[in-house]
Image (cartoon, rainbow over all chains, first blue to last red; front, side, top):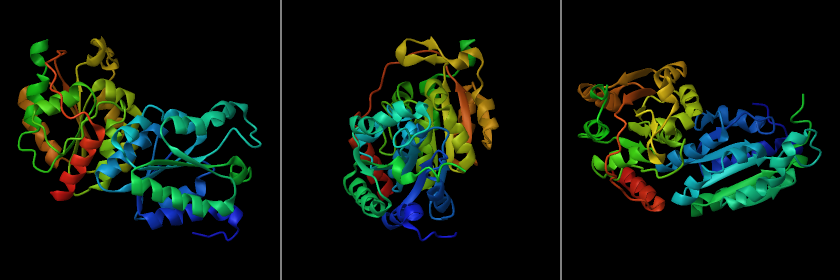
Length: 177
Length: 192
């Protein structure tokens, strides 16, 4: 796959490299423009099972099942998808399953669609209420360090860690054609 | 009509006879009690919540351990809440995953209100439409041995819709501490 060298567009490669470093073997996702490059990298990797979901809450069960079987998993979703997961997240807390979630934010900086705003405005609070540690990522340069630290915390301590990729980082050019 | 339906405890007990290396994920409520009644086992991941998520836990486990057979045993209400997961499983085609739906067409935990299957919603047809390799209805106890054989050797993904009597047998309550259930399972799987 062509690897962009511009950090403004190559931050998904940094996430993928961290997935490889910590040994992620399953990635659940609902197709998403902001995550499209990362999804493509995951799909191209024969060592990672990519699992396309009909709803983000399915991914919570996937992560739990993977951990029972001794594999590490991560979830990719939009901020709207966080709302779809709320009750299912209790599975993670209740059993102490490690969970890494990368959230592409909608409904904030420069959002053109007001229907995205109500969920986007409460996404981080919802994650915290559900027991997640949350880290916002505002710049492409910060992706590597924060994702690496978040993955290490999740898997070292059976913690639930969400990293929120700000809409300013993702940028309009990625999710419009 | 009830004479044509399965006794849930008897059926589940027969499915889990000589279970060997089978990994079992029972859904919340009566399915968890039925699996516990068949005999506690460290390779049971009992659910007490996460309604709608049982089949997906089975998928994550089946993908992680392709060398082992995974049996999801759950109720019609849980399966209906996770209907989309059948499509997700159909995409991944795990050969080692089987789902048994204990279908009494009722929400047993909340007072036996009718479920969608009571109105003719057909889970076998849904599974086949989702590219499951095999799906069938079983309503007679003499079919239990065949279903057990499917759990151990049938090519998945497969789904069995087991039509059970709408009765509420005494509860058999297994471990309820989620951390303990998880840790016991992981240790047993690592050791076997």
